[in-house]
Length: 412
Image (tube, rainbow, N blue to C red; front, side, top):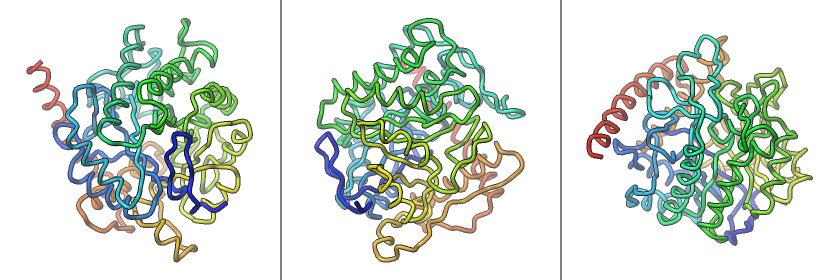
């Protein structure tokens, strides 16, 4: 089977090929946390570039719980005009688009303020950079049920706005991933302990979104193949969760890995395990695909057509590309005529792994901003200069975000 062949999903939606634009943090919302013209331009470029499916960057289910400033928020009462336009731009060229919906849990920078929640009050261990984050509050039963309701409300709003589906983010150390991991979930009630209990929140959300949105709306989950931290969520846990999700007839499960503490999604593990130089999680995915009745998607560091094809031949239904599409949004179209073309992914190898990770992200976000401004990407950008520029931008966006929340609080 070729990666260029159509893919029929269980929801009835047919994708024109098996290439997926995987999620990236964009921070391109307007001052009201709504999709902006820059996002419309960016997603139009990807839609025209040839992928079969686009997964948006994080859309947050709670405006008081943000991965960063400049993020998009979609809540129960959010006006939908901008979201409708966003969906239409992403659906050009017979492309399908699903919205990644998320709650950061404890992965909230201290400067952001707002809610910092987690299953237990376990702080992030970022070494000398740990002070960038607050110690989270262990969630109450009411707060857990509030989060479930928020995910359902956001999924319904996405459906009303014309998106083809949603992806529930349960990876990369965000809230649902925190419930899944024994390192962050120390609860003694029904939400903690065994992997069956630790996955209860995710299962509840999937079940209720499925019931609310129906069978013909794409529903997927992003799941870590492993946390890549000693004693954390691992491949055996992933297998249990994948089997528990099987009755819900998901369209696919996207397999990734890592968290802020162990950024395996950037090719760096936290437990000395060696990740592949490309398609970081494919070897883990191969172990899971034979046990899964749900189609699987693998993402992480793919920049060559041959590697994408290898993933499909290994049993993956879909193949996700992220950073490579920030630098060449039309890479899929180019591969049709230049199959040996190498995509570009920046790699910063500084001694300080946290700063290196931030620099990698800043390089990618710089290209996303350029595409959003209808400019060409640049491969030779300085990592140091890009990081400084991004920190200045984050400072300004944080100030704007706090002003926006203050106005909303005063209005309410």
